[in-house]
Length: 272
Image (cartoon, rainbow, N blue to C red):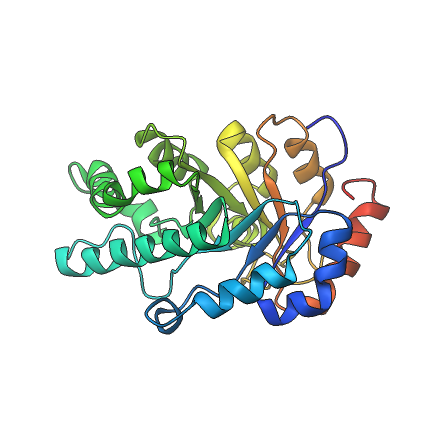
């Protein structure tokens, strides 16, 4: 990226009601958070899509959704449960198609336990990759045809490379990488992982999405920018070397902090 990037945000439609003018004025990237739960995906979600279209009339920024993740592992070894995860991914893609969204955030399968045990069992690393392929392969063609990119977000990932290698294994433009700054900072502070900017550097141009949240390195805080201890200058310096134009999505627990966080990063000369 050669100029200051434009910040976007993640929010449900109820918050978009109050933040829509800010999103549309800057034509900012948006990630909708209404399509995560089984109750929504198994029900009639078209009224939510219609509401989103109305609220986003005139919006030309990039649109995505956070995909389903509660209780779902992309590397589930039980074939019946794995089929359910595949179904949830397919439901998420259907929502993307109806919205015109071009990105869906999904969660990495890698845990801290895995990090310490993947080399403790023969072929364990490949087994994880094979299980994720068994889950996602049935939906990859649909994602490609619908121009939707699935971005793998780090959760407990201590190794910045494993998730990237997994994304590469699909050899598809529909699978790329996401970074959550708070998750990476937790892994750095609590499990000995590298700092957040290293995750950006290791992902390189596979990185097409980032959740921006501040944290203390102990828990998944989703604080306003400036409240925690993430080194934002280092993070944005690493982002500035990329050509992939990742969506920079403020993902805060308290949505009233979205605009102040954007203003803080702007005042630091890091984004707008």
